[in-house]
Amino acid sequence: MGTGEISLWKSPSAASPAVTTTATSSPSSSSSSSEISSPAKSCSSTSPSPLEEEILAGLKQPLLASQEAALMLLRTSTRDGGAAVRAAGASLVNLSLHPPNRAHIVRAGAVPALVELLRVGRGETQGHAAAALFSLAVEDGNSAAIGALGALPPLLRLLAQTSPAAERLRRDAAMAVYHLSMVGTNQSKLVKLGAVKTLLGLVVAEEPTLSAAALMTLCNLAARGEGRAAMMDAGAVAALVGMLRAAELPEVKRELCVAALYLMSRGNMRFRALARDAAAEEVLRAVAEGEKGGVGG
Image (cartoon, rainbow, N blue to C red):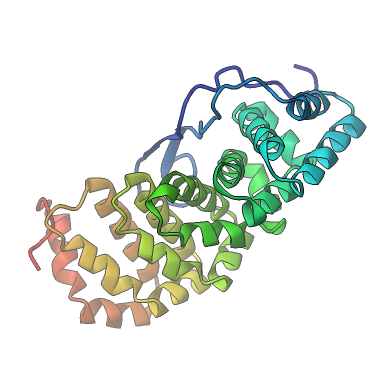
């Protein structure tokens, strides 16, 4: 594939992201704390509309002017609504699933259109935008640009939805936020946007990817002073210790809770007081001794 060329993803049959998480002592590292086998929330296979064909043709051109014209068409179509926008969003999802395309899609200016779809779209259209941002954010070099272009506020609003029908949408939004939180500038933005309370509310979610993504994001925020302060303000110490007391806490959640507590503890006298009040020492000792299921509350 030549420089600047976008290749078309050939397998749009997978219905949801395939995500597995593995907690380690370094939760801020994309290669160690979260193994993403594929953010493959691709779209249902349908006959492409004329608009989709035109956008795809433009995006696959090596000339920057052709790509910009295709993205201008996409941005214009977001204001029209309907099937054309869904097709355009689906096209970007499928294109973003192929790793060599990701950096090029961001450089070509697709992120503002996706952010606009997050803000004004509904249902499937919004889902395509969240899935595409998740896929693009997996590429480390894209995260700062995606955050700077305004993706975090609408992604956090999606996480606050409570409808069962929005579960897949929230899962993709949570994974996008997690990958974006690996960049320091985005960590600061998330703290200022009040993301900690939203994330703490998600850690008890029954959907495993959603809860694990929230915990991994909190670990990333806990690596910064402002993030630690915001987490302690929001009651994270007591909340995480309370989770460790649960009789049936999955191992991944247990490891992530311990990692977040460790990161909050580093050189922090305030943490010591909060941990003492939450009786954290007893719980952490039980975890260290390998008692399965935590300690009874």
